[in-house]
Amino acid sequence: MVICLQVIILMISGMIALPEVKLRQQIPTEKHVELYCDWSLTGFLPPLAYNLAVIILCALHGFLTRKLPENFNEAWYIFVSVSTTTFLWTVFLPTYFTTFYATNQVVLLASCLLLNAGLTLLCLYIPKIYAIYFMDETKLKFSQTLGMESSSVAPSMISNHGQELSVAPYHPNLA
Image (cartoon, rainbow, N blue to C red; front, top):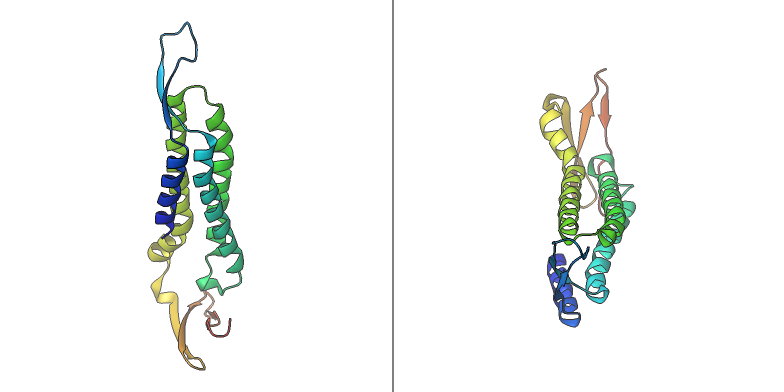
């Protein structure tokens, strides 16, 4: 759904402000001519504004879910992911528009997108990878508690001193 909306926004902005193919010679005495796509700001800003809206919604989601119990809480990882995305785009935009050659703009855009995707995947999946590979399953104990209308399962962990560290079960009806 989110990707379909992005594609629709790109198609509409591409039809409203058609990109033009242009030749550019930055230095008149140099034998270097670039063929590049010139897209006006009216075609460039709507997809960028949509991406900004998605980032703000993700930050809002991370903020609203910050008080869930520890085993269900990924708000910190969402926050770190959104922060790195915001930082990368804050650095990328001025650099992109002030870059001299079009080939450098392409390299800058590709590297920024790859770095953003990699950091986002790392921020969201490192806790899961850590839990799968480095958590000792013998120290995990699952307690089952019956709620009013439904049951919930909450993990608890036994510490090194033999004391049980438990997490209160999360009931969606009570939140």
